[in-house]
Amino acid sequence: MRILIKNGHVVDPANKRDAVANVYISDGKIAAIGNTLAGFTADQEIDASGKLVCPGLVDLSARLREPGYEHKATIASETRAAALSGITTLACPPDTDPVIDTPAVIKLIRQRSERAGYSNVHCIGAASRDLEGELLSEMGALKEAGCVGISNAMIPIKNPLIMKRIMEYAATFDLTIFLFAEDPSLRNSGCMHEGAISTRLGLPGISEAAETVAVARDLALIADTGVRAHFCRISTAKAAQMIARAQYDGLAVTADVSAHQLYLTDMDVGEFDSQCHVRPPLRSQRDMQGLREAVRKGSIGAICSDHQPHENDAKLNPFREAASGISALETLLPLTLRLVDECRISLSEAIARVTVEPARILGIDAGTLSVGSAADLIVVDAEQYWSLSKETMLSRGRNTPFFGWELKGRVTQTLINGQLVYNATE
Image (cartoon, rainbow, N blue to C red):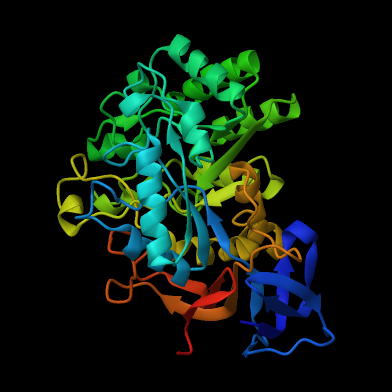
């Protein structure tokens, strides 16, 4: 099918394009971007006047819950929610059940995501067998099966020597290691940021040092092994500064932040609001501002959803026992666009943080509207205001603290490989 998207404001950070233009799509690929294309006859036209046209979003961390946790969500339900939220590519962490430590599990996830047809799903393989932090996984086989990197998910590897061996092995196969920076001893039994509010609520806190000590250790090992590394979901301003310094010194390190960490702080826990129970925890106002500044400067190059859908009962327990995580696919785009008004960041830079930059971290061809690339793109009404509610959420998970927030920017069309998978006008 040939598709013409007319008169949209095309924002393509990868090619430094930020202007009104037509987008021509043929055979599932971008054929041209401009005012006219001689001899092009469209089978379908989409009028994008007054709207943004940009690459489909690339999400670095979205738990689809399948296989193993289908009572929370499925690949079909969450990729559909992703596509309707403008996310055309996402990375799945390895903490499924069974763990993504064999090619068979990767094949299963790929088959089910292709059958659903809503989003491109890439797997991040396990760094250790069963994520136990003892025996190294078969990284060569995982890479051959299509893994875009390796990680031990949110389970810290306590032994620095084992972590060093994992990094050396990953470097051998030119694999990026995705690191969740948390010292388990310093985290102890904490469930929220350590500070005045945790003291007032009587909840055990997680200090800033739980993250910064882990970042310092991993940076030393990265320098020693030469592995390409990515720090996932940084939550403290100090850790962001440490990573920026390492980048300045020439280490091949990148970092991302969850969108909710740029808007919520430990004050939002309020009176034990379990929807604000996340890991890493919501930090202080100073940390939030420091993370925003790191995003603006680019030392934190990507914003992710950190999507973790849960069944309703999982959030009904007292704060300390409630499951951590937010169902976050549907708020990734509007929260990113909101940074343009609040953080002195340009629209093109904000879009880059959720398109081309995460694609580069994953090492995949995505997040761009380059001629000849796959036509994974979205049309967005950037001026539409809307409010998130349980009735309108698309994800199976209804666990989010953003209910009732006035959000700005909504996807009207999503195309994947030139196929219209979502059209709000139909």
